[in-house]
Length: 463
Ligand code: SF4
Ligand code: SF4
Image 1 (spheres, rainbow, N blue to C red):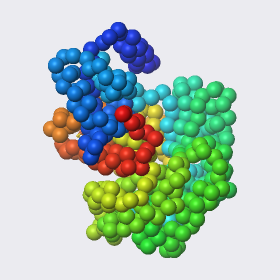
Image 2: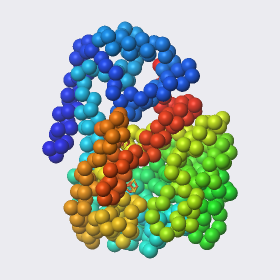
Image 3: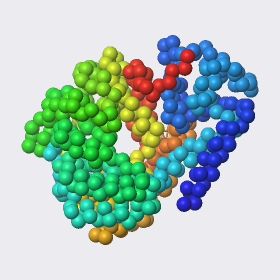
Image 4: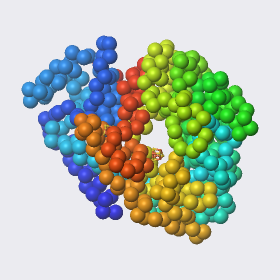
């Protein structure tokens, strides 16, 4: 509560700042420029906005004028200042960034990721899950609903994330929980939202309509390239292929589901053999989904996320996405990459957030959706009457373990917003002195260029 009051005070300070008359202005310390042929792209880490500045000469003049301690008088400068690329000289941006970081970590909304089913109809070659359990039990469903009923007054909103295994194996359980929690939120007039990470195999149109009724508006579905490569890594539990059915589902959703409210992020877990096929993949996806803004695209290296299965594909793992982006930038295909912008704006994983937890199908409470085998990730369990019986010492370590400011971090514009904690699980590694920027930093420049090439609506054009 004290923290919330503090944030309100600082927010008021921000309002006072903007009504000062004729303030001197300075360049935002969070600006990141990407000169292109004939224009310059600018990204601001703090506001997460992107601009395309068409007049490079005028930009240089603005910067020179500011260096001489004068205020430039040009429409371009006025527009860039309006959008936060130039700020009041007395505005302490680092504090603003600090506040943004803290308010994200200590948000007053409940963010519960639910392992609706810990079984899966796939056996992906890099998957770390062990499939020891099945669908979420009735007792855990009741306990979770009781938890929300008893604690909703302390939260300003509820966000449910459906995860697994494969969550759609437990569609009925998802509906039962969603109906109850949506009802509680509606009664208490609190916003409700939901997202889902699914392999997409069961997401046909009727299933999609059921999930939309549960307000699942954000989906992440993995396609590891086109049929040949996808079917090598994303294998059905019975050993069969999965690409054709997922694509058929996505096409049907594109053509038959009229709602404009949902977003499907199509993720690729990149392995070595997919890289030469990237242009072909982009061309195919652009032809299928390039004109539908509800579908967007993101890339991650397939990694050693634990478990035994990944040892079979160790030689296929890549550590960088550089080659992927080079191919995509070479390709003529225009895809929607906007999903990456929201990831760039909040690079720290939800595991660092106070009100974020993972509910296992058996009622175990975790913090991270990857390191299920680690003791530090087992916070406790939910009791039958809906109380979280958790080890607060463990929880506190997830929340406040000290950030490691490496030399690279000291020189990085994103430090205040990142603190080398993009993956808080890594803070449990002993003697951690390395820099871990996560994929957002690595992807920043190519993603901005790709968004620019696709004429993303998120890019403001400054004449
Ligand atoms: S971890 Fe990377 S992105 Fe984060 S502050 Fe350090 S250098 Fe910057
Ligand atoms: S804490 Fe790290 S490993 Fe766990 S889900 Fe977050 S980013 Fe992934």
